Image (cartoon, rainbow, N blue to C red; front, side):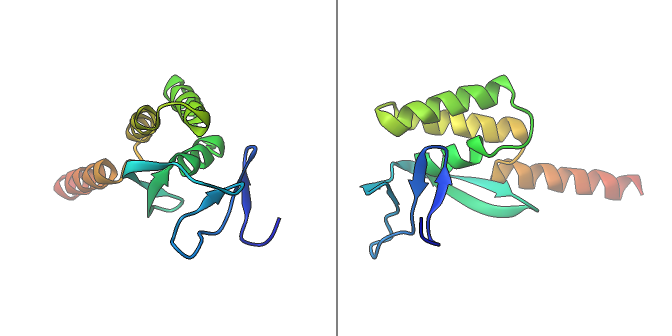
Length: 121
């Protein structure tokens, strides 16, 4: 594996080609119709654009392995082969919403919390 590749379960995710298309073991990745914007790490924004990226996030998740997580992981795993990509996106978005990392909702929650703290001071 070269320095541009990383593993996600049994999949090898590679550096995008000259056209910006990343590949999974030589085949194009499976894109979502619309990216899911989330916050990762210390609140850094990230657009999850493919089934493979969603799988990587779910597979490496260190938080609670809730039923929502398991449902999303099952839907995304299925989409990696022949399952429904739209269903995988919906399940992944539901997981990010439930965990509070869905970007638009996370920003809204942070603003409400900051306003509450300011008013309480």
